[in-house]
Amino acid sequence: MQAQKLIYDGSFEGLLTAIFVVYEERIPNAEIVEERFYEPDFFAEKNHIYTDETKAARVWDKLKQFPQFSATVYRSFLTELREKESYILKAIQYVLKTKNAKDYGEPAVLKLAQWTKQIGREKHRMEAFVRFKRTKDDLYIALVAPDFNVLPLIAKHFKNRYADQQFVIVDHKRNYGIYYDLKSITFVTLDFDANNLKDGLHEEEQYYDEMWQDYFISTGIKSRINKKLHQQHVPKRYWKYLNEKNPL
Image 1: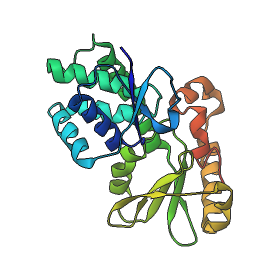
Image 2: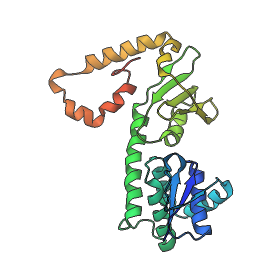
Image 3: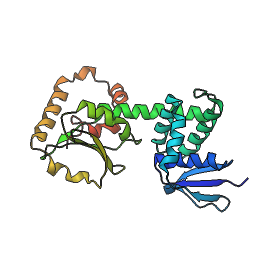
Image 4: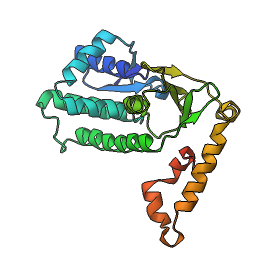
């Protein structure tokens, strides 16, 4: 049977809309593809899906009957992996049919659980390793480039932890960020040049970096240094965020 490709805009609501269309039109052989990854296929029928918040909400309300599973669906979407839509659709179809959201013998359900574990580790590390720099305008800024799109998952943590200071966390890999204005979190689109950050920093930041460096060196015991263990707890790819490792 000829496959039908459903092409959506890459948003979570767009994906849910596409899933709604699969059910509404009873498409037996659907393939949901993010627009930026779409490659023309002579043997497949294509259908552009336009995001419909009402349809997306209906699917999401259905999934919320299974709280843990719905969370894995959202987190799996944030992995940005090219095959995510296929596994998400299959997992949803299986769970809604069987009402069993924890059957890890089903490959799609297992795959989403594995992705959720991976993105959970990335979320935890971002919350642990993000470091803010104070700017001349008294805005605190942090630069990150996580493997997965975890900013939506860490926003609440930083809002609660730094409730008394304005901050922005910039994902310069994805050109957007989360901005906190002492009241609420806003997602902002940014065209950010990290090379220009140093000129905008508060003069005290240089001394903070030097203090971190001195503290890090003075508290280290050379005879007990275990580089392998250290890198297990603080992988090298996160060092660029740490003042003691990579000061601006």
